[in-house]
Image (cartoon, rainbow, N blue to C red; front, side):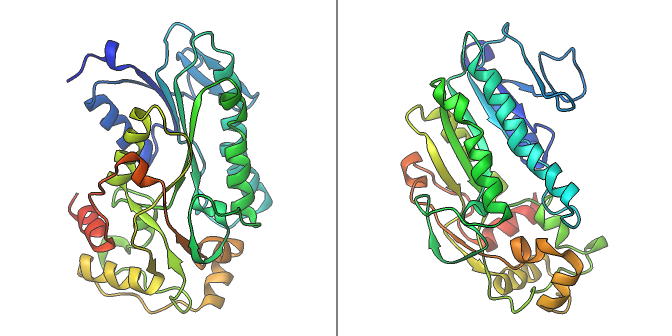
Length: 303
């Protein structure tokens, strides 16, 4: 293992989340010293008090980089105005306060890797969209645009910044897959609506590998779509899950029922067309472990 004093120190917001916890383990295995951005202990070297918008960053711990993964789940219940405000604040306000604080450090980190989402492109991307495609015009698109713009103070301070636009991150430990498997693993969720809408995804192992490559490549900045090359329909996703998990599918859920159950989330996320590609992953020299959905789901099931 490398000596952390020479490899460097990394601050992670959202360190206890699904992706943040795996990234933390990978960084520690690579020899980095990892610090979480605490929300509960004012005595921690890195602390965010969201109630009063106070960001406390220790000047005694020089940071090599910051990985910003904080954000409330968009899939936990219907989008009331209160829930939307929580989702927005947890991403945009947290990122803005963090970047403002980073810009004022006497010893600034060399890089900021900040989460975003392929929701940037809107909910009706049937035609392929890569990193140079324009933003959409719905709530998730507006959220993603504001989320990325919140890093402006860090960029202006000369901190190399990467906007990680994640597709569906596949892991059996949490996230979207746990919502698609019935209790006790008796069945998997079938297609939603007509099942023709497209979905872009990435295995959690590949997502972590991409983050580490972004960290190490000192010339890489800007937007990056963190997605596998194989875009699948919702029908194909459900069929492949059923085959890999060796469990039957639940009956298809008509779009009207999806909308009745989930409200605005239905068209914004569950029934959205998301044909997102990346033309920039090749700049990082990425060699995906799981380029196909079947490989990714098999890896998740056996992890």
